[in-house]
Length: 132
Image (cartoon, rainbow, N blue to C red; front, side, top):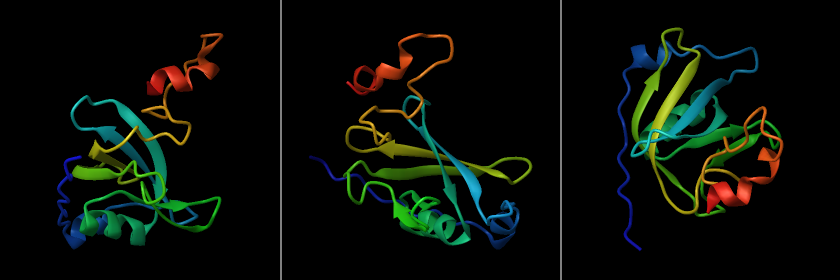
């Protein structure tokens, strides 16, 4: 298996200060496949995990359920290598374009967490098919 290059990103203090965190100190982070533009997942970041992500060139999130730092892929091997990072016009949503390693982003085994659609009776059972 070819090792994927880690590329840290530099953010100015002005850009980091433009990020708006919610009452819990978190900001939504959307992760998108840089090659296909497919939205892979959404997770939460705090100021520490945002800085870690940019400095390490890999996605690092805040787990609300476990109340701890969570580096994507440390246990699954399905790592995300950041290639581009953006913040929206209000500063309250982040977008990371990544090179996805492994099976995909979803803990269910699907490539993307967004494999279910409204209005499709059997979409709840498509995780395996979407991840194949």
